[in-house]
Amino acid sequence: PGSMRALHKDYRTVTPQNFSNYESMKQDFKLEIPEYFNFANDVLDQWTNMEKAGKRPSNPAFWWINGNGEEVRWSFEELGSLSKKFANILTEACGLQRGDRVIVLLPRIPEWWLANIACLRTGYDNHTCVKTKHNEMMAIFFTSGTSGYPKMTGHTHSSFGLGLSINGRFWLDLTPLDVMWNTSDTGWAKSAWSSVYSPWIQGACVFAHYLPRFEPTSILQTLSKFPITVFCSAPTAYRMLVQNDKARNYKFKSLKHCVTAGEPINPEVTEQWRNRTGLDIYEGYGQTETVLICGNFKGMKIKPGSMGKPSPAFDVKILDVNGNVLPPGKEGDIGIRVQPNRPVGLFTHYIDNPTKTASTLRGNFYITGDRGYMDEDGYFWFVSRADDIILSSGYRIGPFEVESALIEHPAVAESAVVSSPDPIRGEVVKAFIVLNPDYKSHDQEQLKKEIQEHVKRNTAPYKYPRKVEFIQELPKTISGKIKRNELRKKEWETT
Ligand code: ATP
Ligand code: MG
Image (cartoon, rainbow, N blue to C red):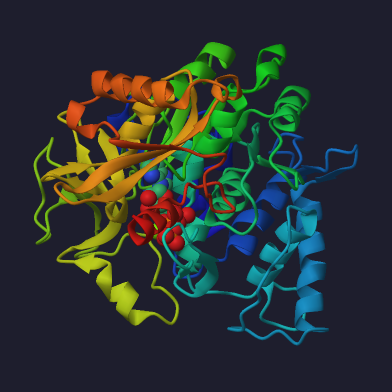
C-alpha cells in the first residue's frame, strides 16, 4: 500500500486531471520510489482491495473481445486470482525460479495478460506474490527492429511498473472510469505501455480486441459499439482509418481522448481525424528504452506536427556532438539527462550488449538516436531518426517533413523518403510513393512532375524529391513502422 500511496495520495483522488496548463501538470508531478515494489502486488492487488471496499466503479479491469461475439470481462479480483493460478503453474509444473527468464509469444488473447502478471508474481512455491526490490529486473522488451535487428531492452519493476504511471496519468489522462483501447500487438513495448501498466496503475479498464490483422472497418465498428473512452493506435493505422470511405458512417459516442506514438503523425491525418470525430490526436514520443519522453498533454495547446513538451519524468534536451545543450531552434540529437541521477522510466541496459549500451551515453545524457529541435515555446519537433537523415549538397533533410508534404497531395496514399546516391550532390531525396487507387491509371510521368512541384511549393525547394518511384506498398515492421533503411539499402546497392 505504501507504494500505491506514492502514486496517488488517496485512491479516491484519481479523478480527471484537468490540468489547466503544462506548468501546473509539471508541478503536480512527484514520484517516490519505494525500496520494494511489485506491480502485481502493489498496484493490481491494491485495486482489488479498492474494488472490494466499493471504492472503484464497477468497470471491469479487463475487457476482451474476439470480434466474433466472444467476450471476456474480469474484475481486478478475477484478474488477481487467475494470474495467481497461472503463477502456480509456472512455479510448480514448470519449476520456474526467481531470476529465470520466460519468453512469452502469444497473440492478443487473455492469457497473454495473465502470463505477464504471473511472471511478476513468481518466486515462491505458493501464490504469495514475491517481494521484489524496485530495481530488480522485471521484463525484457524487444525494440521494433526498424533499423536492423531488434534489441533486448531491460526494464525493472520501477522503470516500467512505476514509470509508466507518467503515461497513464499525464498523457493518457486515465481514471478508473475509463476504458482504454490500445491496438498494438503484444510483442512490442507499446503493449506494456498502453495495454498493461499505464491503464492499470490508474485503475482503468484495459480493452483488447483479438484482431489478427489490421482491418479499418472492424476498428471503426469496435470504437462505435463499445464504450471506449481512450484510444491509442499507430500513425499508420490512423492514416488508414481516415482514408476509409466508411469512416463517416460511424459515431464514437464514448470516445473522448485519442493518442498515437511510435512514428511521427502527419498533420494532414490529424486534421482529417478532427474533421471526422471532433477530437484531436495527442501525439506522444518515446522508445522501448523509455516511458513517454515528450507528449501533448490535455490542457495544453497542440501545435500540429510537434510531439509536444517533455514528460515530467525527464529533463529532455537537444545536444550537439559533444553533449552540449543547444539553444531553441537548433537541430541536434534528442537526449535525456542521466547525471547526477538516472531518472525512473529509463531502461537499465541492452541485454548482452555492453557496447551498444555504452554507445547511448554522451556526457550527462542518454542519446535517443533521434534528431529534433525545440522551439522558443519549449515544444519539441521530431526531425528524423539519426540514421534516416539525408545529406544533399550540404543540406540536412529529414524525411518526415517531405513525407508530410507529399501526403497533402490527393494522389498520395503514403510515402517513404530516403537518400539516393548522386554523383554531384552526394545524396538526393528519393520518394517511394503508394498512390491512391483513383490515381493509379494516370500518366505517371505527368503525375511525378505534379507531385514534385507540389512539394517544392510546400517545403523549401531543396527538399523536393528529385527521384520518385511509385510502388504498391511500403516495407513496414510488424508494428507498422516504415522501414526506410530497407529502401535505402536497395537504393545504394543498385543505383
Ligand atoms: P530499433 O531500435 O530496433 O531500430 P525502433 O527504434 O523503431 O526500432 P521502438 O523502440 O519501438 O523501436 O521505437 C522508438 C522510436 O520510434 C523512437 O526512437 C523514434 O524514432 C520513433 N518514434 C516514437 N514516437 C515517435 C513520434 N511521436 N514521432 C517520431 N518518432 C517517434
Ligand atoms: Mg530504437
